[in-house]
Image (cartoon, rainbow, N blue to C red; front, side):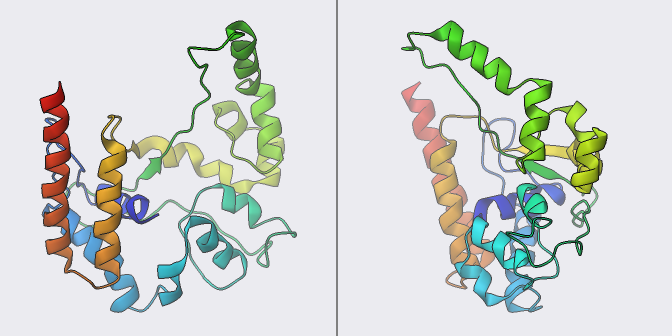
Length: 233
């Protein structure tokens, strides 16, 4: 979750990961401010517990569900779990809001989307049947059923369905949340870039390296990754 959390703070301050020419610019003043804020939540302000350094995304969500945190930014699935007795100790005690925007002239409240997609492999021997199944899963009816079971619906009709809203009130803010949605760069090299960022942010939050230093070093490594990709082409 290191990278996801950093990007939320970066984008909410008007920063960018890469520029239009795919040059790394996350070590900008906005990036430094974003990561320093993230580090300071633990080490300066003490509002985030040190245990969070050892928690992955699922354990961090459960930490909130166990009533150990007052505020958490997390996948919407945990908002469902928060109202389910079998998972949560805070049923009926939850509120939902957009993430606050950061500082700066281009600051805004954003969300970060990460997509998982159904695909049909080129070697499939039953492409028509596979396509029919995908269409069924993505249908209005199936999306609602998935949502009522506690997973996250993606269709606009689901977000405004009366039955869904009665069970999961947070769907009322999803459209506003997506007015400023961002995503990670859709390029083949992103997996390697993510690894570099993950290590850099981990170094910063564990105080192994200063924020500016770790972002500058990561920018150099990302530039090398992208340069190597361009040379291959």
